[in-house]
Length: 115
Image (tube, rainbow, N blue to C red; front, side, top):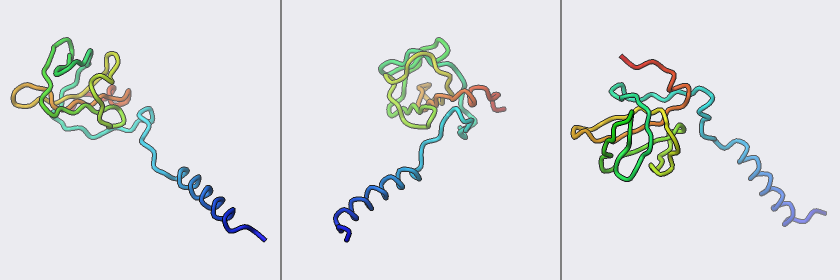
């Protein structure tokens, strides 16, 4: 005879493992997945993001309140999490402040500029 408690525990473990196996995973940026970014974005290289500003192509630019920086997986990141130079596409608002930045994967960085 089997113990109902053991059967329930084993069933729970199997369900958990099976659920993890089919759970959606974020896309791998090295696989060539390209995001659809707005056409009015500008391309540049971002270095040394700081508090309230970013440096893109050697020019220090202010960040707008509520600015968003997204990594290669399209996840929001804080400026302090960015290490080293990074190829980016960015948007500026009507005051000239940067309000959206997308860090590009190698595939996205190699794409030509939109016309």
